[in-house]
Image 1 (cartoon, helix red, strand yellow):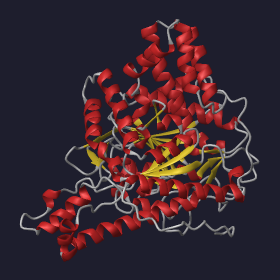
Image 2 (spheres, one colour):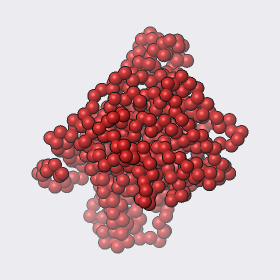
Image 3 (tube, one colour):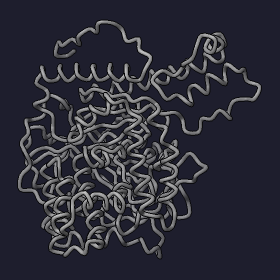
Image 4 (cartoon, one colour):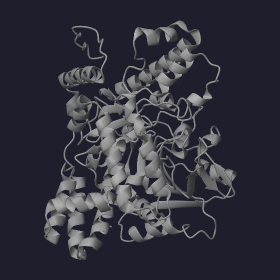
Length: 562
C-alpha cells in the first residue's frame, strides 16, 4: 500500500470446503504478492538468505485435553471441544445440520468455539505482522501438519535412550520428514520446493525443519529459522519488535560463556578446550569471557555484566516429561529462564550447549523460548540430548567461523545464513566421519571431499549435498544410489539435526566495515536506555526490504573442514 499498489480483486469470495481449495487460494495470494514485489523492484534488493516465504502451522495448547471437561458437561460442549482438539483441515466444524445445530444453539459450546476463533484471529494478526516486516507471503498449513506428534515422541524417546539404534532412529526421522510433507497440501509443497534454495521463515511449534525436500531435511536445503508460538504471548511480543540489528564482524569477537558444570563434571572443560584447539592457528582470535556459575544469583550477574551481542550457555538442560517447562541445571537448582524476567539482561544472540533446550515433541515453555521471552532474538537450541564432545566441537567451529569467515565478507549476511551455513558444514562432517569408517576412506580423500563441500556451501551452490554424495561414490568406486542408500540408513539423523534455530534472526545482519547500512551510533547492540526493556536494543530503522544494497556473490571465503 505504501507504494500505491493494490491487490487485484478476486472474482468471488472464498467459499471452499476442502483443503485443496484453501491451498489454491493461499498460493494465488502468494503469486499476487510476489507480483507486487517484482513491480516495485524490491526483489532486486533482497539479501541472499533472507526469507522469501513464511510457512506457518497453527498450534493447540499441548496440555489441553478432553479429560479436562466435566463429565456432566453438555454433549454439545464436548463436541465443540473435540472439534478444536481434533481439527485436521482448515475448517474446524464439519458435519450435517443435525450434528451442528446443537452446538450452535448451546451458549457454552459457542463460547468454546468463539474463544478458539479469537485465538486464531490473534494468530493471524501475528502472521500479518511477520509478513509485513518482510513483505513476503504466508503459507498457512492446515492443523493436520501438527499431527505427527506421536512420531516425534517416539523419536525423542529413542534419542534419550542410552544406546539408541542408529538405523531405527534414522528411519523414523526420515518417516517424520515424509509425513510432514504428505500432510501439507500439494500447492503449498510445490511453493516451498520452489523456494528450497532461499530463506524460509517457519512459525509454529511443529518442527517443519525436518520436512524432506529432495530427501534432505528442509533446514539443510533452505536457510531457515523458526519462531515458536508458545508460551503465552511470545509470538505477539516478537512480532511487535521487528527492527533490524546491524553487527560488524568485530562485534562478534567478544563472546560470553556461562558455564554451569560442577567442579568435577567431565564435560566442564570440553567447550573451552575445543575452542582453544580448533582456533589454535586462527589469525583472528575470539575473546572469551568464561564465567562459572553455581547459583541463580551468579547466573544473573554473569549476563548482566556482559555488554556484547553473543553468549553461550554451557551446561546441563532437561525436560521433565510430566512438566510444562524445560529447565537448566545451575548448581543445586533447576530454573527456566523466564523466571528471571525483569532481573536479567540477555544479549540478542545465544547459543545453547545443553540437552533438550527446545524438546522435539513440543512443550509449553522450553528453555529456548524462555530466553526469547527475556529478549534474545536468536537462540540456537537443542531438540534432543546432545553428545558433549560433538557439542563442544560445534561451538568451537562457530567461534572459528566468527573469527575467520565473517571478517572476509564483502556483502551483508543475515544471521540465519551465518548459523545455517555452519550447520550444513557440521552435517557434512557428521556424514563423512560415519562413512569414512564404513568405506575406509583415506584422510586425503576425506579432506578433499570435505573442502569441496564447504566451498559449495559457502558459495551457495544448490546441489552441494548431491555433489558430496557423488564425490564419495567416485572416491570409493561405488554407485551413487548405493552411497545414498547407506547415508539414509546410517547417518541421516546426525548430531547436527539435534539443533534448531529459533527467534527472529532474519532481522539481524552482519555487515562488512564501511557498508552504507552501517549505523555507527549503536550498531554493537548496547542496552537501550530508558526503554523499560531488557536485552540489547535494535540498532537501525533501515527498512529490511527496500534499502539494502544490491548484492554480489561471495568470493574467496574458505572455512576449514575441521
